[in-house]
Amino acid sequence: MANANTQDVADRSAVDRFFHITERGSSVTTEVRGGLVTFFTMSYIIVLNPLIIGTVQDDGFEGSFLGGGSEPNLAAVAAATALVAGVMSILMGVIANFPLALAAGLGLNAVVAFSVAALPGMTWPDAMGIVVLEGLVILVLVLTGFREAVFRAVPRELKVAISVGIGLFIAFIGLVDAGFVRIPESMATPVELGISGSLGSWPLLVFAVGLLLAAVLMIRRVRGAILIAIIVATVLAVIIEAVAGVGARTDENPGGWGLNVPALPGQVVAAPDFSLLGQFSLFGSFEKIGAVAVILLVFTLLLADFFDTMGTMVAIGGEAGLLDKEGNPPRTQQILVVDSLAAVAGGAGSVSSNTAYVESASGVGDGARTGLASVTTGVAFLLATFLTPLVEMVPNEAATPALVVVGFLMVVQITGIDWTNLEVAIPAFLTIVLMPFAYSITVGIGAGVISFVLLKVAVGKASKVHPLLWVAAAMFVVYFLMGPIKGALGL
Image (tube, rainbow, N blue to C red; front, top):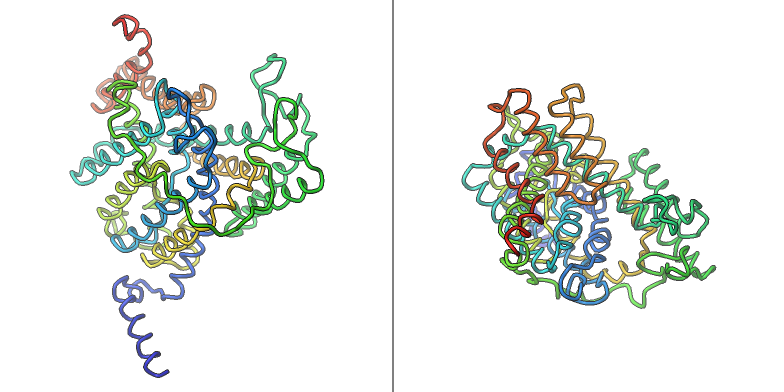
């Protein structure tokens, strides 16, 4: 017994030295607890990522779901999502020693699903190949130090507007997928509330309860609020289905459940399905949509991914008291390298680009200060790969309140835009509204970039526009005119 205690002390000492735990005023117990708090705060992505990218058909010859099937394979998407998140979070902890966890990025997955895979002729492997390319480009930018130039190229207000627009887009998707907002049968208006203006169905009640519960828990600062809301709403849905037998949502049964009919699975624990790993085509998209469109899509993903990471790591570093005098966290280069590799890994794993999660602040708020917390979060994600059968019991109505809540969290950044400066406020506005209205994140970013450049030229401030922004605007113009250009070329 004494030898075991001595060995235990030695192990803790080795861990302490590796992660500099004592130097940062923490303890092994605190780091492990903080890592688990972060996991429970962001583990909703295991449910939400499959609902976003696993339920959308590509525009290939037969319109396949992720994985190539004619039906969604949510369990495989969930398993791959948890696997990549686990591996990359562990790498962040070991290589960068920073309390920052990673997983498939919300917003980024919406871009991939609705603005990439849905393009004419595109397949899911082609779309994931673009994600891999984006990650490789970011990695080069990090290693060459060019990231500062890219960061300076896009005005701060447009960066904020991109996040806000994606937030509205995600919230709109959540409302539509839940059936809370629908296309009316009469087609008299683009959308309407519920079923013919009524919310009179059990699934919509579950959605409303889930949304209200998530909001209340967030206001009361309950950790894991989003995940708790999903679980409670799912349990309520299972009970209602068992009693009322609502059934699936169809044209004949508009008040039914979306995506999954909630029922207890035959098994809770199962061997994970990792069949999605490696299903990407690095250059297949060039043949389908052309080099210009591919470059624009890579640029779009880069904007959404690269700048978000910069802000997240500074925010987490500030919360943990780890920033230097210039406001930079320790091992900045290592943090950005791991984040870039996470984008590559997300595409290679067919789960969309993985990125740093601001939810890591929950673990930091609980005392985490080192990479051991990220390692703990990663291990928890790896264990979660065995629980993916639970994903297939969650109906849209129980999960999509989380999309609305996450949309809100992204929209609150709108205060970072100076609305009195019309030169940037108008492009920011166009960026925000055109994402949900045009149902395209790429369209919103393109409209914002082009209008920003044109307005600067119109007021005699063309010299204030960064050269990289001129290039981006020109590419977006070509992107928007791709139809006429192809027609003129006889393509």
